[in-house]
Image (cartoon, rainbow, N blue to C red):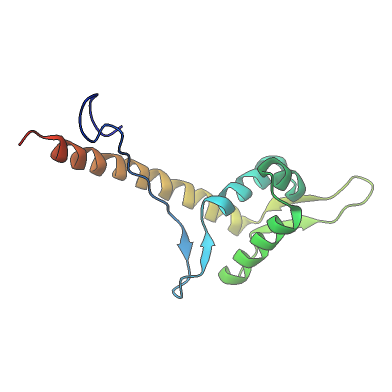
Length: 127
């Protein structure tokens, strides 16, 4: 909320997105891929992560492969199935990137909240 009830900006909100990209502008890691990595970390399975996010396994795997190609390192380590089934887990680099990204996002959220409050206080100030 951007002001008190009755303020002209009461129903106006600020939204932003944060993602990593190459210098050419190719997206590497944004909200969708971040959620996918989190789900893989939680479930231990690319298939389960895809199912939980309601995307196809093929799309999930394609997103991971594209990000890995752009980064130049593995985000996910896969163990093929067998009698016990397969599994997926974040690589050490993938885990480090996910943790650092989460911290960066939290820092941005706190900064944006402060900046947004200042902005809306200024525009809601009586003339």
